[in-house]
Length: 633
Image (cartoon, rainbow, N blue to C red; front, side, top):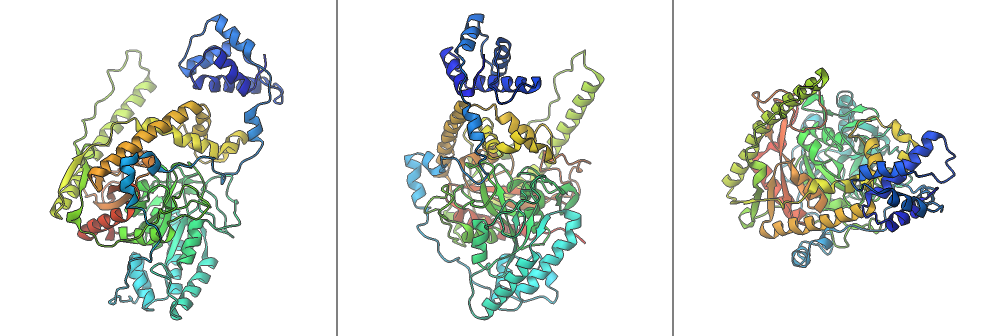
């Protein structure tokens, strides 16, 4: 009996099959059987009773009686396949689904009322004043690690030129790229032209604001006309677009100077891209983590004043932690993603990576707000920088579980007597890694506890809080399902073999696996996500700011709920720190070893990005950890 997907679903329904996974699994099995046998692909595939049994095992349903199986087979009809018809459209990555995610809409009426005061009806000029005491050094390289504000003051006073500053950063990019591998494309010609124009405008009194003349870099998932936009992936090395991304346009309008397009792990996963692996400036033997790998590495190495990264599930947080940069992941829907690679339409966020929270705030002020194209950006989701803040007026909580002593490592249960030599080797390896992981976690916990002590010394009374107990990990397949749809043709065409990484946790396998994720379960996970938004938003009715570990469950939870996060450096590991492993697998951020940075994360309610940045800047003013930088020479 032949079938198409629609007829097959109908037949399953007639047979009383209620699991949403089962039809998808069985349909996939029939197609695989067709391919294996060399059957004409233009003809509908066949289904057998044996396939129904195999699919039922995968789906966790059944078993079915012979009568039920025959009834299902008899009910299958030969119709045109709706899936194949849609595949023929060859939908580009830039086309979003016909639904839009707005986190505030799921937060509940009571919580929604508090959001209204946070939303800004219009974008205001940045609250920034140039320093009258800014002094230019003899050697411009001494400004490599200067803040945006410091550089802006010098440019405004015409004590340095944008052209000289831009050339200095381009020279550093060329100089250190061989060690750190953070550049995909230098935009040198464009940058020099922009810098000359900025100098002319500033000299004529046409000052655009604190980003005027400031060199920056873009994660290479942002389209820039005239240059490749590779997404870091093999097979896309020569891809280009005829229009700049909205964020690029807005930074052009602010007078910023784009000097480079930075690396990202292939299709925004990790720090391995088609040209190699981006490195951590503090320990070049290790990767910089990802996926905003090049953006964080270049900022930390003093090769740009700021960069734009993106986060779907840790891609700003992770490399900022590893490289010791400051990263602001804005509320979902504050920054338009038009012209950026889509991975997950309901989770992708663009944000700045810089040397301080105030630098991030100045950048976010330039790139936020609706553009009329990305419908996920709420009409009044503007960001207006507020500068200083009264800390004593804030209610500050901390996620208690993040700071509790972790449970001691326990090895696996006693091994079976039939354990092979290879199984023993793998078990012992897991036990060694587990003990080392616990040792590193215990060491880094000192810095997190010290952060709480510092906040208390700043006059802040910390309130212990708990993250709502929900299955956040079970909602993560929402991301992979959307990603698999975004790169549907990559899987169907077989071009996924061109991607650098081909392991069990890498995109090619994830995209294939996601095709078995049923539509009903996708909807159910989104309903669970609504509960998460409601309950996390309720936390921010009790506190204004939450202090958290940069890893752990909050990273999953707040990326799903869309809450903003600010990741800040929190000191350097001492010489007594556990040694770094010989091989960086990319699985953990805390493996840097002696002399490498640690971080702490601050969280806030939806659209409360300005208060979050002000709080983080107050912490940085008190600690100055953000002024640390690696010695690269």
